[in-house]
Amino acid sequence: MYLGAALAVVLFAQLSPASVAWLRIMGAAVVFVAWRRPWRTAWRRRTLVLAGAFGLVTGVMNIAFYEAIGHLPLGTAVALEFVGPVTVAAFGSQSRRDVFALLFVVGGVALIADVRWAGSPQGVLFALTAAACWAGYILLGKRVATDAGGIDGLAIGFAVATVVLSPFALGTGPAWTSPKLLGMGVGIGVVSTVVPYVLDQVVLRRIGQARFALLLALLPVSAAVMGFLVLRQIPAIPEALGILAVVGGLGLRSRDPTEPPV
Image 1 (cartoon, rainbow, N blue to C red):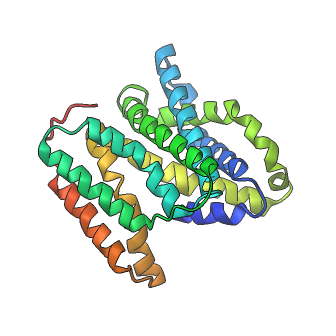
Image 2 (tube, helix red, strand yellow):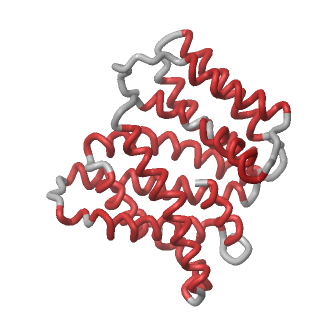
Image 3 (cartoon, one colour):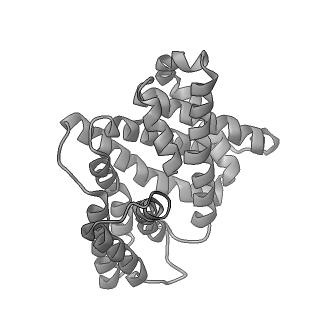
């Protein structure tokens, strides 16, 4: 996922953030459809609508987040977007212990993200839009995992999103005359969408939405750890405390295997 984010930032110099996001969606759709060939399955109308809604919400989330990091510091955008999973986790909290776990995780993410309130109101709006869509991704993703074919549902959803969001393809002109740019766009779709979203489907089939939402706090933690292991970027004291807070919060949350969906 973070390799894809790095590639996306490189493309921002030649394409708009929304155009890069559409290439990511299109690349993921091509890979999913070629891999799963979902037309072989008998689809009910309700299942198609669910998969399509999931794809659209996820596509808008990607576009809104890329626009947000075009206007805000990355840490601020990440922290604002995390409002979505936090909301899902909050509504799924079953006890006071869960509330304390949520507070630990939220504080940890804020420390890791290195929030700096600089940028524009437009960027904040984009980030909050991405947050709302991230909550929708979790809620609809659980339904896709259990009721809409799982990974086959991802193929249908991203195919729908590619078509419906095609107006954002208007800014992708330079990519179609540059194999390098087009390859990077498809590559972003693979590493930022296909691989992590398939893993999300595997996890969502096994745990509740609230627990999954809280586990998403591991994303900034993994980024910090990879920065240390690969780039030798030693976390500052606030970042280290943030990592401990996230891990502690995740360990504190209830582990009831029968946790009901939100």
